[in-house]
Image 1 (spheres, helix red, strand yellow):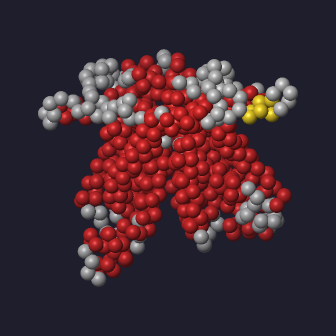
Image 2 (cartoon, chains in turn red, orange):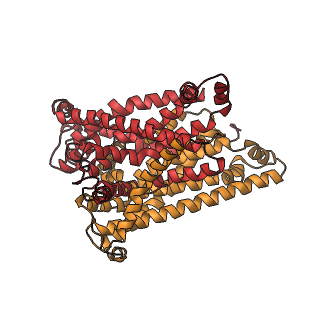
Image 3 (tube, each protein chain N blue to C red):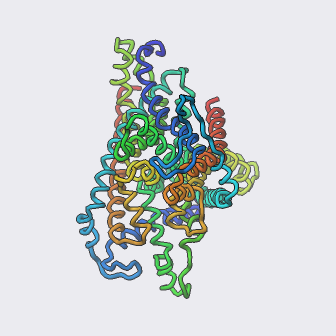
Length: 296
Length: 276
């Protein structure tokens, strides 16, 4: 099989390889280069890193100022820690909510499972931006939740949820819950019910059986679901920008403001590179070994 | 898992589903509110839907977004199917690790980083080659990049589970590998290709962050216009637009899901009748 393709295989390999090389990998090299430049009032708005002097010498002008700025201005450290904390807590709440949901679907009759999964997945297919906007309609000061609670006489003045950390948590949980449920369902569904029966026959309580059998066996689903929520949550921009206030500074938002507000492209590049090394790097290494382990 | 779910589990499931759907349902409700004030019900009205037809900015942005989505998902489906074929069928080849990495990395890359790095690439390319001008072209190129990842993953898993013996039989009967692939394997992986095209279409239509970086000053996609309007506060016509989009997508997905399960069932039946 392999040999029969030989002539034409590069026709199949090269287009995606070259495209991704040029439009995915090489951009990081440019970002890395520009993170050593200085902002300048010109088009494009940064100084040349590599240039030729008049006597045809190649000249490298690197400044570490942008990285030093990241370390000295505390906004970046605060935003980085806040992003980590927010993503971590929302992932945990997603897990606590998503696990019983996935378990309930896995225990439903086979005929209902497809429909339930479709119901869970449908919001994922509809616009993310519009769903965040729709959530705003619920938690606004004069939104659905407050109107309903005031009407019922449960509260005397509106709850302040918008522009708080709670709003950001709610936004992340609401947006990424389907990502948690699906992988959990996939592992829970494969679980052999005979194992639980055997545990019961041997005198184990349902609680004990859950902790000793179900939970450990569903761990791959727990990890996969948590990654699927944590990774997009940590770099989230739309949710803190629309639902959070000035204190909900996440790294994605800082990057956006640096770029569109301050027009400081070199500092924005440095933030991106630092973010990449501090967060995406470890995750990518983890994923790589995870995939290798699965293949083995 | 034959045992029934307990009432407690079922109530958590219902709560979760309610959480997922309540905001959308409330939004659709608001879109029929005659009053522009959100907390006052001014009676039933479809006026906001009528206003959409006269909002040139929104209509132009919607047209651009649709064009981008069609171009990007078509491009991504071609590149992603090629990448999946290479990864599943070609065993070891030079660049395999690189391709695997570049196919998976966009899935874990925060959009904001992809967006900024791609903009820097486009700006540098413009300096060097005077191409591409920021706008439609750059948006499509960047959307193809992240969509290709989703196509590759989807098609890859379908290809892995596809029956190789049919293709081998075709080649034993004298078909070239390319012909066997086009006539036997392609129809088998067609459902995965169609569903990944749909996925790319919705992802592209929905993308705000990457488009905002690479679009440049001239072009605005629909999410960019929606974001800037929403950022300023509530606008009832956005409620109407959102309801339309959500319903259209919902109908498409349910329809596509129905057609695909039917096609799968028919194929399973045919396979059974063929005595396999």
